[in-house]
Image (cartoon, rainbow, N blue to C red):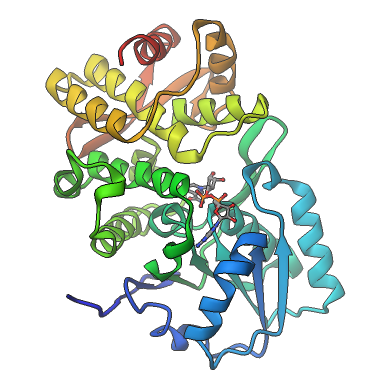
Length: 357
Ligand SMILES: NC(=O)c1ccc[n+]([C@@H]2O[C@H](COP(=O)([O-])OP(=O)(O)OC[C@H]3O[C@@H](n4cnc5c(N)ncnc54)[C@H](O)[C@@H]3O)[C@@H](O)[C@H]2O)c1
């Protein structure tokens, strides 16, 4: 078994990915006089000891602990961290290390990029979703009002250390959540990855290191060519226009679903749109729906919820001049972006989700 991590330097960030990534990343951390680690209550318990055991030469000067959960991805937490950094007299030459899932790396990146006009930060993702997606590519930010990721910045961490070691303590529903984003890469860019996964339930998989390295590289390859999402990066939004509406809807109802559950539902709707709008083969749409249903139960939405979902979608960042734009599939492994879809067809795609399981 290959247990050498994969090293990759892009223009803005340096990556170490795979088994033993953490213990191989001393160089990524070596030039800073001060280290501030951001954790939440779960990663403080489960991941901070692992971090310290594997990087004994790094002396952590300060630990700031925030509250976990999507409903805490808000301005109050940002204020709390800004206050803590100020109270601790953290200077611009410090490195912030973000040890957690996507919520923590999104908030942490935003704080690091704005505190004293920006200090360096490293992402050390501890969830599957963080490893294959959220920690990579420099999107940082918080939810605001009713809307997800409404306020934020594009700013890359100086390094990203992706080590599956942390996943031993991850709860089942967060494995499932990250799996949705892995499936997405298979659909938009990497048909071979899809074939590794097709027919499986995520609980049966025992080759996660291989999958994580592959999916993380897929994302890096996209974002390094289009950091600010002007073109090809938009393909990563497959499943997310409708998926984010589902996610916001359940958050608003105080019954949050995971990001991956919402995106899985969004991918069913947007596969149907791909069939209608891009002439993707019907058998391929069936294959996608079958695989998603094998891994994700349908969300409890009804016809009565359609107006709210449509309203939430109209607020999406992908709406321009009142028109809904989607990243859709032309075929398996090939997405295209900026495809305008009428509200009527979007509505029908959600009806398809409601009535065809
Ligand atoms: N910036 C981006 O490009 C990007 C991309 C995709 C998703 N996201 C964002 O990521 C967020 C979701 O991230 P997530 O799925 O990682 O959820 P999360 O950050 O909420 O983490 C899930 C839970 O697992 C706990 N946890 C984390 N690591 C653990 C570990 N190793 N052991 C035990 N518990 C652990 C956390 O404390 C939390 O309770 C959403 O806010 C989404 O919008 C961002």
